[in-house]
Length: 375
Length: 41
Image (tube, rainbow over all chains, first blue to last red; front, side, top):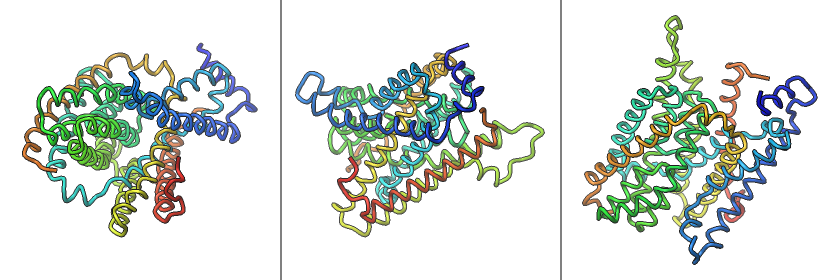
């Protein structure tokens, strides 16, 4: 029996040692402390490394990396001290990340998408459909669990970690599957920040096509921004519009996945047909918060000056980053090596192959839809 | 210790609504200036 299992059993046997509210509050304090350290590193490291040989790396390493690494270190220390499982009540990964996603809605202006992003919408729909279905198919061929297939397909085709979270809510995936998908997204996004701008230069792509390619291909919004900025201002604008359009389609995919899992995957032959009520119960309700935040922010931006609106929405964005840091720290704190060993190499193979398909299809679509496009 | 599927589902739903309420409440506080620009580090 592992040390982890022994300590869990010890908690079950001894009622006095059961996680209490005080332990949960202690857990939240651990998460907050590590999150503050993450925020400090995220802001200080680029300044410290500026001008030195590690300047590019220092500027490119983003908060998810610091947060997960610090969470893992905290995990090791708390496990060694034998208190991690008692504090675990405070590691509210799902709550933190869902709150972060509701706040993400505030940075998505519905009217911009509706009026200025026709090609972006077309690209997003075609790209998401093709890449999602390819990943789903390949995951099936390699015998992956349906829930992990749904998570990986959403993560690679839409917007990385946040899509994986939305999909996890829709299909009720295990926390380990979510942690695994999030780790893959981050592991693949980091090199693409440098690789895609370099390839765009090698292929001689126009800034618009390069931006659409970056926005359609890189999974995390932060990495898209970083890569777009390396290519230039025009590329960054297009990359952001394409990415935001994909983010906006997250809600649609969440609804579709909810319906598919309720009606097809988890329906036993003898079970009654799921009612609209069942569908509603499974629907990830925070997606409504995400849409509401987007509507509220869009309405607000119409009332105030551009500069004021940008500054105020910037505060909402800072809060969103804080919640996502809290979530990534919690993922690190909750991580168990056994879950990675269980999953094996196949999800990495599926994710890698899907990323290559995404790269090629996104390049074709970007060249088709955005050559001759002016930002 | 182990929660039943019903308990897990209820907890997930509660977290969904909690996240929606906290997220929207924070947004309203930001837009109304209660959380001013420069306060969040």
